[in-house]
Length: 467
Image (cartoon, rainbow, N blue to C red; front, side, top):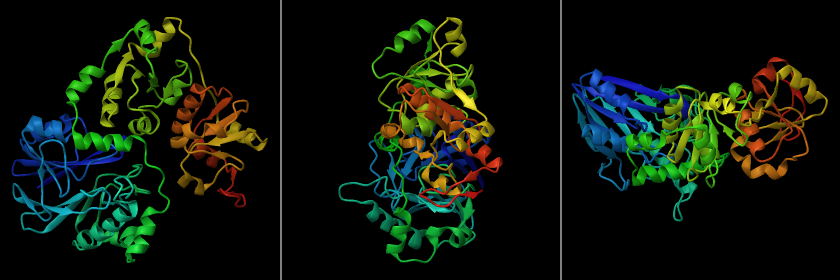
């Protein structure tokens, strides 16, 4: 028996490779197929099954391409209705993989079709369970992503309660838990940093697996849910309906554009210039009106949260990073890329074209200004505020910044910060595009601010305290 977790940090996503006696199965693969095919080839194994835990909302799965290229079978749990060929398994149905058995557990709640896959070893003993978005380390899947006219988030939360109590908690304590996501994913409220656990550990420490009534559980898992990222419903539909081959998408979207061609393409209706360089590079010079979402962070999810997938994209990338920028967009269902600027910003500045810059302050200089009463814009998530905020700061989560521009004054100067500097540069670039010019980015964000022993406040009028 061989199991490998293939974890992708920028999406906080875990796919799995399982193998026994030359037969392999993949669970929840990402859009590109090479990592799984290359692994099987290196181990002299044949991919027999591609198991999907549900219709994913946060990324486009590679199951269709992978099944086609390897002549394997796509398997979903009960109630899944894909618009392409797949095997819809029954609850408790078993699949043979070499000396191993994979048993389907229908675990609705995150979505109606959600399934977990229980791996039984050669002695038919429970070894591991691949829980998808049903159970995470320290959390469970949010129940508000598959809401329909006849199905509320409270209905789904009730289903999740039954799934956890009747299917998951009954497994042996030593059974390994392999979830589909880790910390940073918006598929849960507060997922732990570990990427695997055990049933016994989760029964002790996961709030959602503690003894409580169904009504108490429903309240616990539905309280404090922020709005899901806008692209989630777009991706869920793609995963259900099917998609164009990733090879065709890459060929179509990886177009080299000269400065002249790039300028012409900028005049396309609703086009968006996306600068994928690190914030430190972006601030020194960028094309006016471009948005900075760097490849060095959660690039795909932030593109999905802030940009419309229907609008064409033009890319700026560091040399050698162009293919990566296009592929990571395709992972989240953004396939409308008109091209990228050949030789990047060096070509743009070399042609004498207009650029803009961002002013940045070190945290120490910012703290002095903040004490003098300068306006501060904090673009962290609400859950991050409990660790302290700058007294008087305006708190607007980056994910909803576009919808809250009316709360900001174009005539006022703002210091913009997040936790570490990645999101604040995204926010500054968005605001600059919308005509806000009086902005300063805070380098290192709240992490650096705290290192200085700065006095912070708790939100909603709590007394100031030093953290």
